[in-house]
Length: 172
Image (cartoon, rainbow, N blue to C red; front, side, top):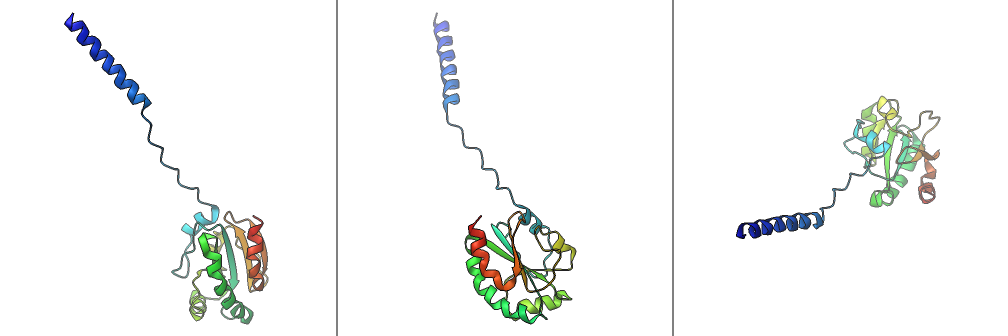
């Protein structure tokens, strides 16, 4: 009889333990990493002329087509640099320069002239072709193209119209 009561106590404890384990809250599953957008993925596989790398998680991107030898480009550059900190706030927008210079050395000299903190890709290179939304049929410079993170073009215009970035991105 003692044996049966002992056995019943063991069975009761086992079922009680199983029930407690089932009722215990489960640890939350680890959050899945945020899906990286098209431009972010492309940035990881693009070789930039400069050491600067653009933010691969920005919400919007501005491609700035420019060159050292272009007078209007040099006139616009200080204004765009001054606006850049506002653009970058909270990972909102990133600028990628598409240099129309003949050599990477000339593109670097141009960025150094203005202490421009931008990542640079040569316009006439295969690297530019990796970037979704980057202009393909450039007719004049300075020129900007603003895209969303997937490379959908929101604005393509003369670089002096860079201030439209606020209006263009508010609609989104």
